[in-house]
Length: 254
Length: 328
Image 1 (cartoon, rainbow over the protein chains, first blue to last red):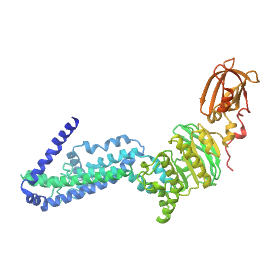
Image 2 (image 1 turned 135 degrees about the horizontal axis):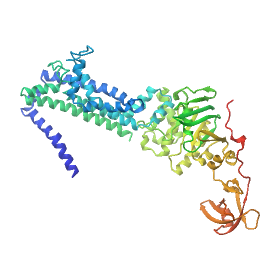
Image 3 (image 1 turned 60 degrees about the vertical axis):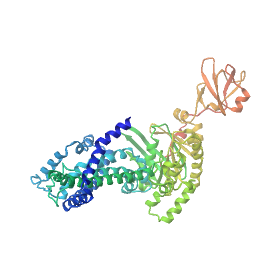
Image 4 (image 1 turned 90 degrees about the vertical axis):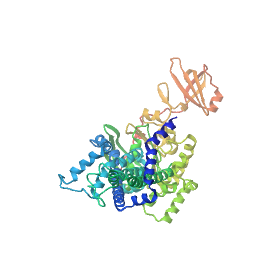
């Protein structure tokens, strides 16, 4: 019974829209799909999206791990507050983030920093939106980690950095990989936070999601579905790969 | 290498865990830090290893002040209560860890690890991961890992606490003989007095962050300095207002010299038989008999006997036995 409800729910929300997307992408044949997906504007948008998403995911893997460490291992005034604020990018409408970044780092920047229309601006916006993924995936693993293993390594002569590299990092790596994979997949489709700061200049600063939007706006639904399908495939491959690797790493240690 | 503690104190918040501990652990000696939970014994062990900072006092290794040295510079082997295995490394990888840190070449490292695997009888388990080992095997792996760096001092925190009775007994005597063989200064933390008595050359009994008494196990057992030590190391019973070990008393037939009493309870625990007697003024004393002694007398509830001391009673407050070793 419960299984039926779960499967029905997932079909309604995920599987049926996916099938619809697939049909739309290929309803004019493989050739039409291919030319829509590999057109210059599409390729430029996809390249920019993947590059910025990858940069943001990697940066967040590092910064997110550091943040998780501080939240788990340190005690300071306002820690509970910081712990709550981490989730803000999840709760905040991405358009609000987009407007905020535009006013802070756009042409009207109070700091005279204008990163609109560049990959830097896009990456920063994506970093903000995906920060919780890394922090929240690493944090529970760090909390459950016994400090004795690290202490044991230090009695065996290891420096703090060596202890981190050889004991702590391997322990959190599966969770970190999963979190980074999720962040990357989420970043690929990011629209609201990026749309203002990117300026949407075709071939230069247009991300894939906004290219898809412009295609739909001009009535090219099938081409839009084709580009969307490529985005979806990228996200799926990364998700599956990060999960498989993480599981394989975790299985060894039981 | 000797380990000297000079006035070591430590508080966690407002709780004083160690209060001015001074003692010397001699070269090659096996010392048991014995005390109830919360007595500060594990904290003291971690302070010696450099894993917990102290508030005041000094830690010296053969005269060298290491109070401020981090754990990695102390060259002290430490076995943790839960063994603290490196879960992502095989048994071989765990034992090789310290040698790898020292950048010992691969071939030499392999030879040393193989030797250690033989020493702790884990040759066939080299490629296993910690979660695939039994408790006893995990504990031997932890010991080999600590011994790999050829430490000057070996610290064992409740090393047999998580094992079942049979494995514990075997491992205990094995660790004892290994320690003798290697001649390494060893300090072991335990709350089990029989374990401490069996394994240690010297006992240091801690209570409430203070050393209650230190000395040879048999001496401390026979001459406890305080009521706490007397009660912690073994059972005590009273006759004529004086403390005795129950095995220091004997039963004799009614009419002989001694305190008259009626048997109110007989408990048979395998080799040991406990007989409780109550006198006319309702004071109870219990006597520990061996199986053979009990067979000869065959005490039953309601029977009358006399109780009398077989040996000298416990000498309390023996000032010469109480003191921990001062630092030169």
